[in-house]
Image 1 (cartoon, one colour):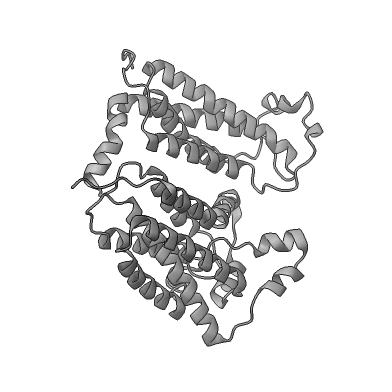
Image 2 (cartoon, rainbow, N blue to C red; image 1 turned 45 degrees about the vertical axis):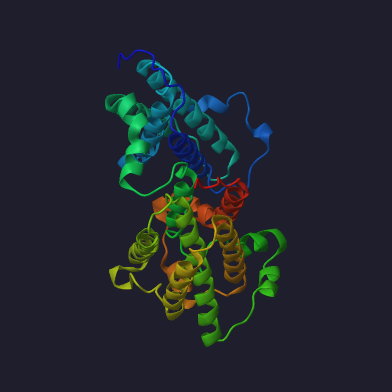
Length: 372
């Protein structure tokens, strides 16, 4: 805690990316449902009056712990980032103050959202969580934190600069937590189209399929998704790495997340109801396609991933929901997790477009020539 000013001034890029992504996630959860905003004039001079109001009567231990735990990682990540070029005590204080101001801003903005109420208790829990995380980072120490990306790469076969891609894969796993109309479906815009243009517009865009044809369409959507995800994983690996195991583990983890989400929503006996015939065929075909496409040059692989993402997103938007989706939505009681489910839904909606942008940026980078 009494370290001298370190010579290194730049925190690891992976740490910065993770900190920013987590902060954005916190903002999205806090400001859910992101619509129905009141005019800015609603923020009067008394907007911060909730900070001096009496303690809420119906505040539970769940509320306190969820708010505390939400900001604990943010405090730790921000303190770890700031410790790269400052004394430890300065980094800890700055991170706590920054998290407190962020929480205060988000709580105050809830005044503009009907159905949301800013709370001093939530703000206090957030600050306690951020302070706990910052102290945890200080206890671990700047040197250990600054070396963790190198240690991670020594264990896992990821190339330098893979942090953004790993974050993208993490977001894909998170998207599987939200009920989807088809297996691995992301980028489904029809609900938003219905809100903007009326429910009749999505009905015009959807294509009617028979039972057998729908299974084939789902298989194609799943296959193209597996191809895109698999090629993104290949792009993250260091040269000479065998992609079979990392790609297989990625798809297996996504299947595990979907099974866990199904068991949570429908009961343990329904953990595999998502694994339809179309999903099974799509996973198999997608894995075989990745095995063939992996031999393409890097730029061509990334462009193939872009095409696969575009095709899969179009398919998932024109295919009607399957019976599994209707059963999940009918039994789904979001309860206390409504804000977090809003984050998963937003992640699922935005993921393919973020992945397309990522692949295009990676493909546009000049490739280094190999030395003979």
